[in-house]
Length: 152
Image (cartoon, rainbow, N blue to C red; front, side, top):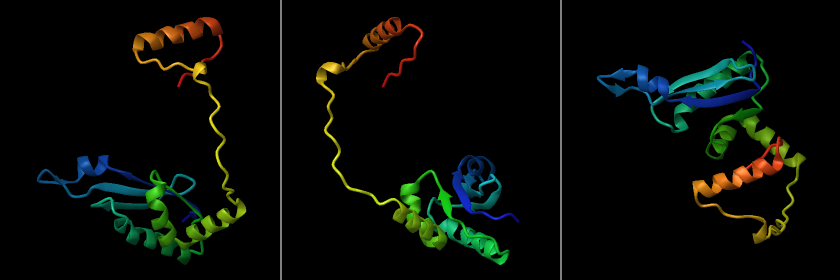
């Protein structure tokens, strides 16, 4: 087995929804997958809820296997919900928490007030209709010619 120092974790709901039904009711909610930095699947588990507790055993089994093979520990975990997953992964994989503390020390955060917004109300116009938006975009296109316009 190859080592995993970076783990990308995601849930797929399509597979469980379409394949694993018993009398029309789904047996699982999702397939949780964890891939290493090479895109190889290192963790795969069918789960019945979105709760982190469903991922504890497979995650611990994966890290124990890595330890048994003498592989380096996982340093980084990526998910699509970092705000809700951060505490769980740092608790379950202590090396991830250690790496976060190391990174936090490298770049001290300075608290400073944001500068005031200095955009004058005469510098922009709110367009409330599709017709007005199209009119403004056409005017910008004709004045720019072959350039690029970015509209927000």
